[in-house]
Image (tube, rainbow, N blue to C red):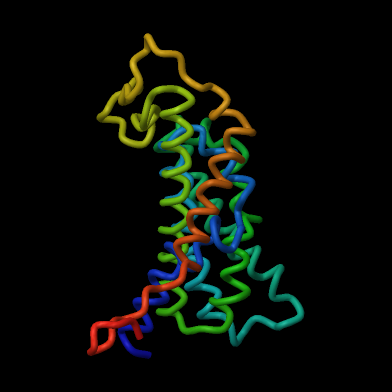
Length: 225
């Protein structure tokens, strides 16, 4: 496969096949954890790790796993890596573990990870599957951070509050005050309706970017082709 094709696999998940905004997968954790941008970073990194590792293993075993029991096998592989992530998070970033709550272990049944295992990793080489996992993870993480940033800034007036839980050297109280505390914030944005609103706006934007008509190249005479 050419380098261009591999680059397309890597970048597909960022916009054209963004797992959240284009494939509409992983909606539940996306809406639940994006009250803060730092939560999006933590969840995105955890999901990317599981995506990468599970894609590699499932691709390596794709000719060994019987077709009749492939889904239970995929879930077993994914659950193993989720357990590793959960233990690491509990040990080194307990504040993030508290913030993500039940949604961290629920990565096991995240449709993004299981969907990529079924649709891509089980049919492609180890390298391509690894690239797909990284690309989908990056797209998922970017979406979570953008949603979390919008909701946190408008709803709380801060940005990256809680990042100290991921990077202890910043301190537990680290945050960037975007909107002065003297100004009332729109707290609805940190609730479920605000999450659905931002999700819908971003989905509309992603759809427009990927489906808008491309400008035709000018002809030699200066007109449009």
